[in-house]
Length: 383
Image (cartoon, rainbow, N blue to C red; front, side, top):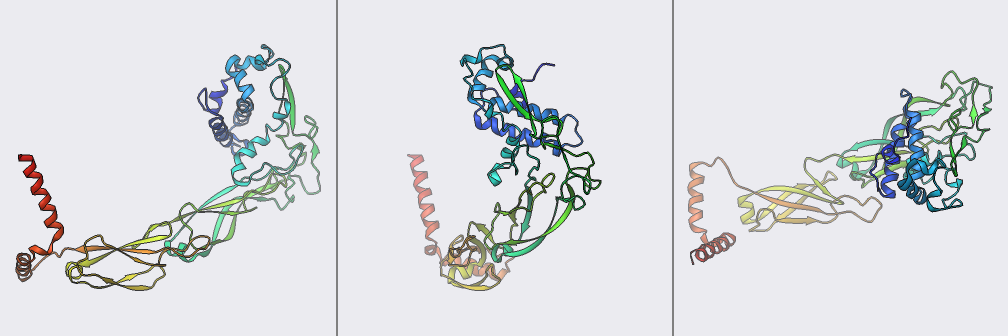
């Protein structure tokens, strides 16, 4: 069967940049990793195919040869793509074929690949994500919250080894414990994950009956999480070693808690500042007065309304906003006045407003200025 185009395998366009190729590979690796596709018999082969494609396309020299000659560049049919004598980088670049999966999948979080060396007998567990919603009040004060996380934990029956109690894993006969096998392709020696032991370097003849040789079992865990004051939507909290247990005694991954702060009925948040729209009567805005407003800490503040305040006017309460996440004081709270027009007027109220309107022609400077501009506009159009 003819090999598929490497760009097609990674789901990227020809001529894709190195970053696009890496993103395509990471996406495919996550999608096809055998640990996540136990019910898909084709996942392993597709996973290896994606790994092979990335081995070539991530290297500028090999990519150039592939772009020019296709698969023939690695089947002994071409002369090294213009680099006689092995101008490409040597087999050391291929040695990380399997570990690249872990490095690329989890490198953004913990900056490294799997635990262990050589044959990778113990694979690091996956990092986990937990989405946590909190109220704005909780984000203001901080809290400790208990969460239940479905994850994989080390098997107690076999102590995470994957073998029946007392049994010892044996060296894989195919890769001699290295976890990788080498194959010659034209001028290149390619290292791939051992198909017999799946890169573990060991075989288990008597797998544990509880975990079936994986060294870990599915289980819900309760964790107490400290949410610091000042968190906002998108804040990420890392709990080292609280992720998925590693395969066959490998180190656990990390748990990342992503915070989402719920919308509030009274306050709108902007970074460390809060905004609150407060309705005031037309007479209070005209004559001045005071209004009592709530604060996020559950308190109250009296705000003085200057006479002649217009709709949308803002006033600031210093230090009444949200605390900064890593210290440094607190933000401010901004009060925005919403001047309210009275409704359902009685006959007497209407009469008084008409009388007031007749006496207040000189008390509306914004209206006078606007209609003066309108008159000038119309006169200009006539001219």
